[in-house]
Amino acid sequence: MKRQLTCIICPRGCALEATVQDGQVTVTGNACQRGAEYAVSECLHPVRTVTTIVKVANRENTMVSVKTETPVPKESMAEVVAALRKLSVAAPVAVGDVIAENVCGSRIVATKDIT
Image 1 (cartoon, rainbow, N blue to C red):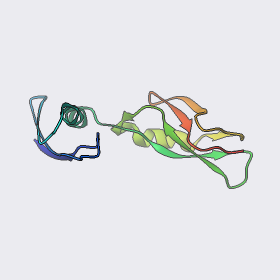
Image 2 (cartoon, rainbow, N blue to C red):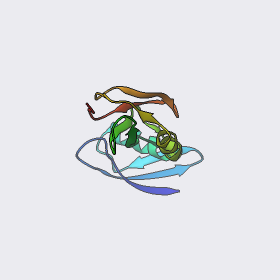
Image 3 (cartoon, helix red, strand yellow):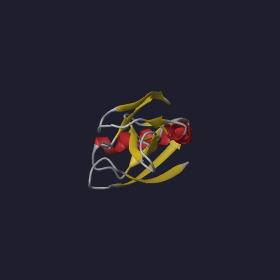
Image 4 (cartoon, rainbow, N blue to C red):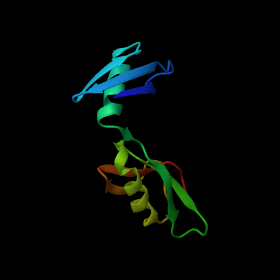
């Protein structure tokens, strides 16, 4: 199977072609080793940082933006969002505050101050 990817590791944005055969990935088009590593990871175990919002319980019509502290498996993104939809936090909230300890293997942290 062949995949066309654009490397997101640096601003160069190399056009990569990754060929997956028998669990092995061959990468062309990368200007550096980091691009090849990105393509292998994206083909075999893609991960994403999830950004969303969580309700602030003691503020009317207020949400706080949050993100996963570390990337989670791509197939877990919907599960992360569903779990966070059920949460609410109380203000005040500061950037970097941990909103949830373990959602699909990552802590959820605030990315906005709510006073």
